[in-house]
Amino acid sequence: MIFMSGKNSKKAKRNGVFAAIWLLLIIILIVVFLVKKDDFAANLKSTHFFERVVGSTPEFLQNYETKKKDNKSNGLLDVDVAPVPGQKETQDPGTYDLDDLNSQSEQEQAAAPATESPKEEERAQETASTKEEEKAPEKPKPTATTKAKLFFVQVDADGNVNRKSVVRQIPKSDSPLTDTIKALLAGPTDSEKSVSLIPQGTRLLSATVRNGIAALNFSEEFEFNAIGADGYRGQLMQIVFTATEFATVESVQFLIEGQRKEYIGSGEDVWMWIGSPYTRASFN
Image (cartoon, rainbow, N blue to C red; front, side, top):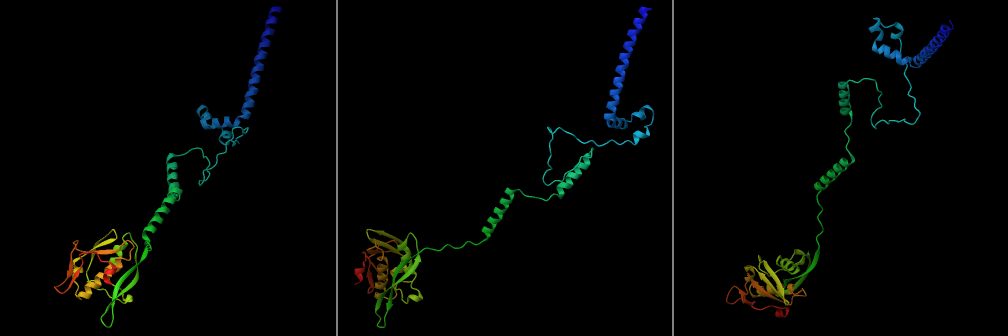
């Protein structure tokens, strides 16, 4: 009896321990259920547990609404997501339809105003500026000029031929002697009130200066003067005095079509020697 009594005592103690453990587990489950009841109710409602087991969902579970939880954090992992500039903030509704997202993206792209990057705007401005510059007519640059002293003649009432010099502005270039002789061949202007005895149509073919001698090569028109002896003398004088205005020229050698001739003239009684260079002293 004593042995059985001790055995029953141990069994009673073991049963008490098991009962305490079960009670503790039940308390823990109750506490967990109270804390996580929203999750349990949501899972039971979403998985249709009662419909599968007993055939219908209890009314209290159908009417049960889960409370929206506030996200709590200790502040260590909080991240503020800033909205993208130009876009509205959106809330996550839970589930998306791919077709709805695609159509929404296309609508946003179509509604978004077309903007150009700063580089593209600069290129567009440069292109427009270049086109305006191309359209705008270029302003002519002022031509540099130099003074040239030209010699013409005046005929007085008695028929005497007198030398007359005029100063004219001509374009400046690297061939001042050529430009000056060509200006002389073009003849005087109305304001210069003088005439030229050089035959019309005479052209300067070339001009070179060596050792103070200017070799001036004229076209064949220079060879014949309709006025006569005074005309030949006058045309040679005009050329020599104009050419020797240059410090590098002391005398002039006349050439006709590149040939050095002894005379120019139109007949036996009208001849003018040109076989040697002329100076200003040749007309004294």
